[in-house]
Image 1 (cartoon, rainbow, N blue to C red):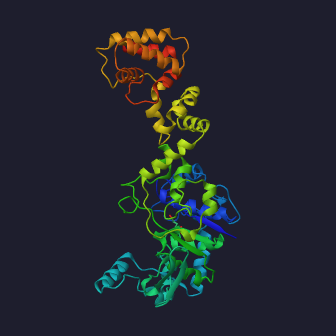
Image 2: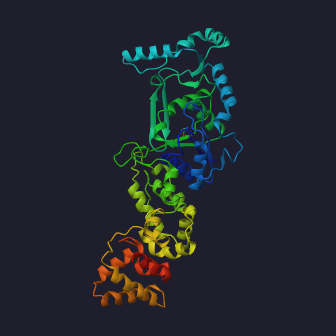
Image 3: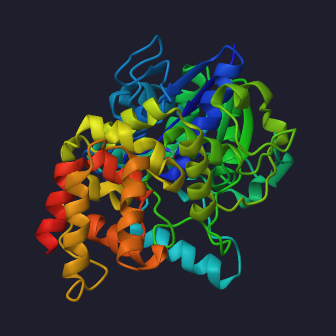
Length: 465
Ligand code: GLU
């Protein structure tokens, strides 16, 4: 039974694009193997909690079509799926660990911990808790009974190798001398990430923990907990962290990082997911553009390279343009109408304009730049018309005389005006283009004029005069 999960923390504006990548891989891996994909909300860090973030995470996952089989709103046999609703469970296991001697109470003050850290740093040792409270548990328990603040720590054995096999990275080994006696339960009664993640992954039957590389240093700590609780280990796979083009870690300063930003900028979820699937992984036939279904078919975790892949928004924009180009006209019109819901664009104009604009659009948002003149009269012009009134009058007269208002005829009739006025075609049509649209660069002019209609074109020239 393959069961995968993502475990986002509601500590930001939304789901980070790196986490969306992790989500996609987990989802694909589960679906490909007839398994189950779970979304668990890890909201135990109350100091970093951002209200509203959880809703945004769910909305974004939905927008990208990454729908969990079990999770907060859907429920499932292993709920609740929000960690703040599972505090009793963590408490129970913390007590079990204490009774087994695998964990202990600690009442050390921040001042004492700072002192210990300083002393160790001075001796050039890795700063770690010195197990002071472990040797005085009876005394510690008595102070706790009188109301003193306490945490519960993992009793990490000394000088032991912790080894695990990472699907992407191979064997990973660390000596416990490098591992601190982790806090498992905090003084506010909440578990730490390490405690909650292990208990939930186990209780929720997670078979594969597929997460970002930044968690790899936590995994040995988790393994110690699995061992202390005598639980079987899941399979671990640590995905590479996405990088900015300059190879630094993908960050807010250099790249938009929130998944919803891409949707609101007119990127297509399928294109974003296609691009993400190429992070550290390549299609066996070197294809760049492929569907979700195809990815699901050929994807293997083993094929992911552990080196930091570059998330390049330029490349993504190119890929998005390819998706738009390949889309059926009808579908693209639907997507444009949906994207511009609030603008209330005329459906008929959108549908007729799609074949003209499709190849010029890289994102849905480009539509407005390219085609707004079809819905609104220009207010600024990229040419000066002060000495062109006569020609404009001729153009208007000719427009008014056209009976068969369709692109080819419009083109022919306008050529006649140019010839008569002895204006080179290129110059004439540039002028006409700007007169109609305000801009020097537009979709094909004759077709655009056809869409605008005779009255509107005539009125635009009239206004300009
Ligand atoms: N809560 C962690 C996060 O914010 C989960 C890490 C994990 O997948 O174990 O990403």
